[in-house]
Length: 209
Image (cartoon, rainbow, N blue to C red):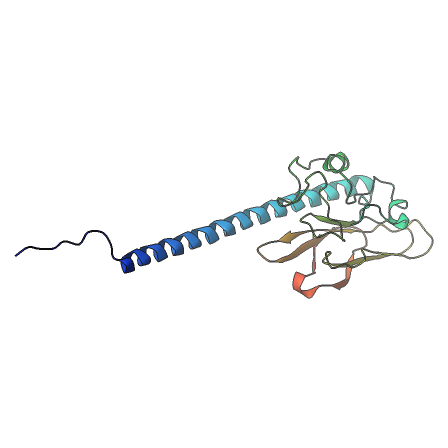
């Protein structure tokens, strides 16, 4: 009697091996993507912390924060009233920001930004950049109200109402991939900014620095 030995695998066995490989590959890819996402969020948090520290150092020296807004130019009520520095806008380059706020690294900027030369977000453009708004100084004899003007690509409407002769605070923020919402932080000094309107899904809440 001759014994018959199987050569190779059956179709079912091959399918099982392929399925196992696909599952392992999928789990590995998902885990790697999550690690990359967490790494980008950590970089964003570190950048914004560095920015906040630089802004507070600026305030200690100047008595107010640099003016800034989510547009290519800021309203006259903001940047002409506050002459402590040039306004920080969507067209302000990183080198200019570092000239105003010493200590920021050359790598400052959202890791998914389409252009690291310009670190701050435009409210009308859906792009991965940082938010900076505020730094108002009211040098008039009456109350001054300023807001960021709401838009679908900006997380909320930020508003500052300042009595005559008072300095305003600021809000900075980044979009967290892990939390899937904007993380906003307000300055420690000056008249605080508030949320006039916002998108609930984006968790539009200001944490104080």
